[in-house]
Length: 471
Image 1 (cartoon, helix red, strand yellow):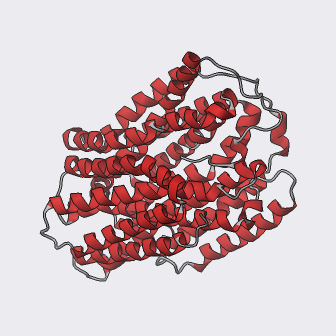
Image 2: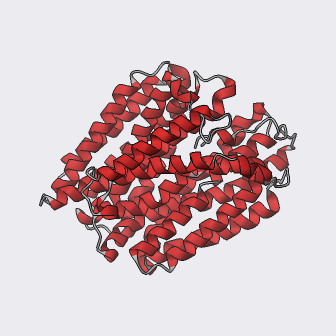
Image 3: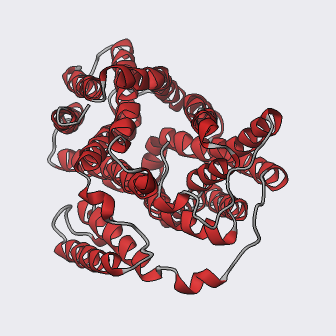
């Protein structure tokens, strides 16, 4: 995970890094791992439930994608807000607040009896989980000296991928035994444990200061939300406005007006919601678009594969969870190797290799016949995870290698925003394309084949972009 926003870095008014013993430093990292486990389990487990929810609510693939989008939209948009508010209201306080909001959304999801209620629950879950990463990074940055900060962040971050490996299989078993609602029971338990652990174990370095809220760039936040919501709903408008995807020009107009107003406003403010200076850094933007394409590919396949395994191979939720677990394990296996290769050879080679592997796997899935062995599907999924893991750390490296030290926070914020934008569009377009192919009366396997090939094309664009990275 990367620093999500400029505001997640410490300001001049923040305490300088505190000298801590090895024992207390390990204790702090364990404390901050607890919210990450709850957040990652919630996200990873839900992916397994999407096919079941689609069938229970009798919805199309484009509407099913909104179950993912409803969570990811606020998760992405509110990261900078949590970072900025954490400087004044206290980072520990906001982590606790966010976890409370996550639990409210989780209770709503368990009790949901309609699609609208479940979508609202997912929005609230995403809004609550959004603060975990930026605020945890900021606390670690305050408590660790620069020389130890990288290792501390790496140790803290490792619990996320490990949780992502275990969560899908656990979710599949739960769904087959007790139904989709029960996947939220572990989230509820993990969230309550995280609240207790953070309350008693996380440091509180300052008292809340509410005065700065009067000068916060609230209009910038609203305009930013208008940009993201307008463009994403334009891509997948059918479930929202009833107009075919990419044809509701009202939504595109809202997004265009919002982005114009946002740029004009942020350029003239001394303390904007989002610093626009990093957009002028060519190396950063090439890497940011590259990681966006990588995340588009991963999000697309992450949304499609559970549906594909049910529709084409008639697999249970448990089998689907096991397949997702294999992909996550392979991803985790090569993440560190990708960083090592980037340091040794430069970012270009591992990024191109990783994106090429992802593209090849999409073509592989497209070529598989309906009756193909699950070993062939699982093998492709494992190889895809290995390729995706290779490219992440080198992209992070390329993004930040030509950024001045005083701009790292703002650069990381823009980079992360584009990264999560790829995640949003991958699920949205994956659902739209699949539903359009099915509506066109294509056979089920042919519909998936078409979408896999389109995603392969996106990954190939990532390969070409990787060639433009500076060493």
